[in-house]
Length: 327
Image 1 (tube, rainbow, N blue to C red):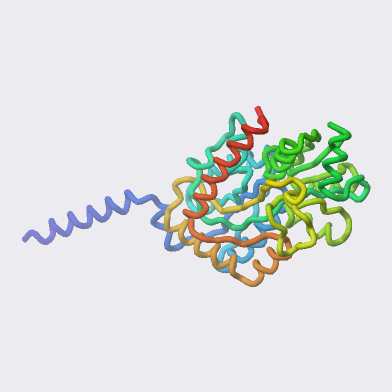
Image 2 (cartoon, rainbow, N blue to C red; image 1 turned 90 degrees about the vertical axis):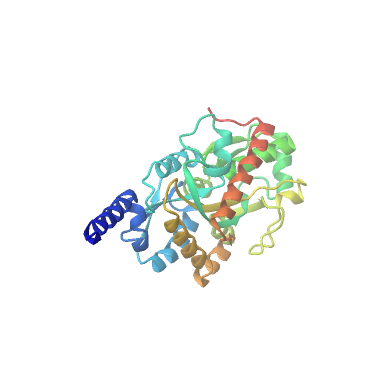
């Protein structure tokens, strides 16, 4: 006689629980059911964009849905990071985080429209790669020692381009100036691609770029490689010396990772992490990244979380030491 009331109560409880679960969590098992947007904080053609497209291509195959690249340059990546942070936490927006957006900018800018930690959930560390000082063929210096000597004799004369204020390339040049006492003029662009075009065209004489996008031009002899920003030479380009060989103790590098808006379901994050790790192990990604001078990393979401925490602390010290800031 009590079966029907108990059954009705059970159905009501199940319905209540189901209603309490956000729709994006309930759909996690079917994720993804439509294309995913990957916001890249720089224009097409730069090192960030190139690496994002390579790994996105392989992830798309495994996910069964296209990952569409959404390039949003400007403000050192802050514009793109804000757009990603304000997106729905449903797994259909991913952000290609950089050492700039999640290490430098929160320290360099007095005010930014997102929080590197509170606005995002980490997914996976994609890669690390050296930055590199390069010059057009008419520039009088062909080595880091010659660059430093020339800049020291001509303070404020050398103009150098980067992908934008707050990029690891920008802060790498700031660190060089701090350690050597030279004075150069920063010319920020909206991305590495436009800056490289002007370097090749002779409108700018010096640039700090990511090795992945600079390498093809170096191999073609269109520009001169002066020095890598990492502490050791790159396996993919052992002939290129490091800045540290001229300026002991100098070291910076670029890194890239996938993050999602805070509150994205853990099931979705876990799936993206698994797919990304598998993509980084494919022959295509390993070959293409090696050609670009980038090292695939992978690992857990916690590994990327630790990377972000470490980078925020590191660049806080560098910004304080150099006095660099952006209002």
